[in-house]
Image (cartoon, rainbow, N blue to C red):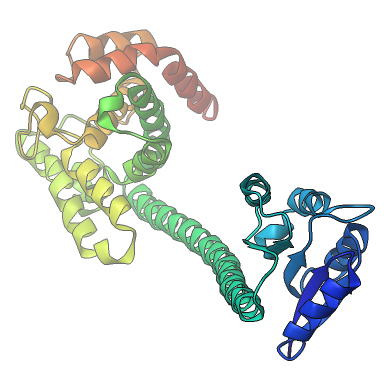
Length: 366
């Protein structure tokens, strides 16, 4: 199918000369003025391969046509070749400022016109094809990105469900663990948010904070491997029993390692860190590895404070709950082990939110 060429010139002889040059290779449309040319361009913009434009015309001259085409960004898709008897450099420069593709001064050679038109048509056809492909690729990428986002969200929900199921397993073994897990998740999120705000050097993001909160549910997963006579003992544990209880952090990691391939790697990593190291202490006197300072993963440090705080303000089978004031001072005074000074600052500045959450949970059972 022949490509369409629009010739715009008020002189019929000029139009006919160009028609004779191009008729064998192109389907030629003629317009005797700028107004008629714009009508053709608007009606057939997707069909016109190139516009041959004279400058001096009645009603609307060539510059007027260029202005209107520029308003609608038509020259991005339709090349314009100006053929003019005005060969002043200023005129040529002005035409190029309007975004034309080429300029030929009269008199011109037939073969030169044909070759320049052919080059322009081929160039813009290639350019338009590339742009169409880019548009198509963008649509495909958007669809793939949407699908990826849906898959990511589904994976996230799967990870949360896996963690919730494992947390439920702990509930079935330890009568106190169910609500304890929920409270620790809430306290951990509050502390992590404050750490993100005060200490950006840890690189925490909202997503990290949420993941730490979710993963905290598995900090005591190893308790399912502790014998009932130790796990559910109402009184004080013997030294031997306490050593058995301490092993829950390592036993929990053994469980998590065996299922690491069924969930997201980041959730798996955080769950492992929290499970193994939430009983480490900043001075190195915790367990199981005796880590100290910033060698303790920040996720485990956060959950450690949340876990201790909940243990203090909650009633257990072997103790009454401490008041919020007592619990607050016991942690700050180091009566429950040594914690990071940065986390203690976060603890102090989050006191009101922590206590509101503690009261909210307490109300459910009163």
